[in-house]
Image (tube, rainbow, N blue to C red; front, side, top):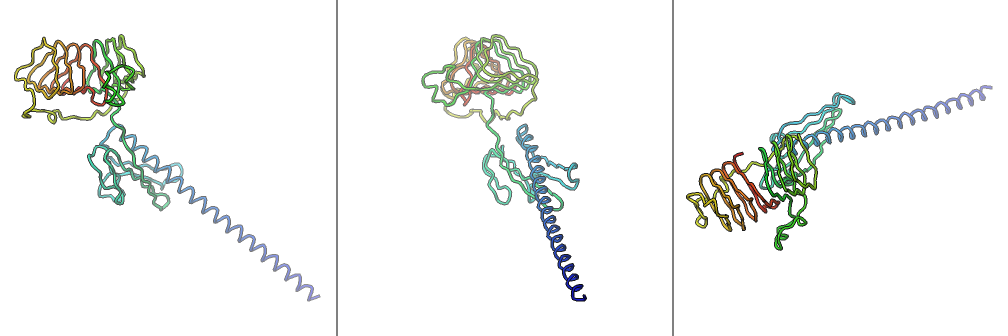
Length: 327
């Protein structure tokens, strides 16, 4: 009888031990699974916060090329202790580097190379005591507009507006079929009295008045003002160069002016018969008014107001660059 009781107790003990082992296995598996879930949650949360910080910084850089403010984000929905940030402060070991406006490469995060025209964005996320780093390199595309004006843009008469794939296409003359999309931006009002062919988009901060305009693109009115690159006109002043044509007095207004080199004029210049540039550059220290349009290949710099009326062919890649300091 005692021997039988001993066998029963032994069997009970074995069953109990097996049950304990099973419970321990289940608990261990649950613990490992929970750790795996927690780790995945932290990684995903860090990824989301980091992406949000980088997306915010990239949006700021698209509007302002020299953006350098700190960005902080907190996740109050999942974990109030979670946060992410991005800073351009050079003293911070995890700082981002904005080199969009730079002329050469810069050293970035942990000795990385940040080429000119790009920004290295370093997002730091802190999730439940752990720190995560995400590094992205973003670039800003070249200025997307053929014509950009900080003031009102007015055009009267024939106008052909577009962009060239290559200057080689000018060898056999210029035709509308040679042009691709080239957009126009004005941070104020837009007025075009044609006939005008616009191959590209038109964007204005206020309203647009378009008469006789054929468009191959969209029109956007009441748009946000955009950053326009600042150009120091004095950097393009050819004064003192021996090869320039120096108009001590303004050139005759009744004669069509054709230029194939450097030319400089002082005072108010009026050209009633138009201006043709054959690789020429005209710098006017004063106001410039051109009737019958500007045509050809070259550039015009004017420190005062610039008015162009009549037929003009305006394309990109410096086919005809018009830069004025006044409105």
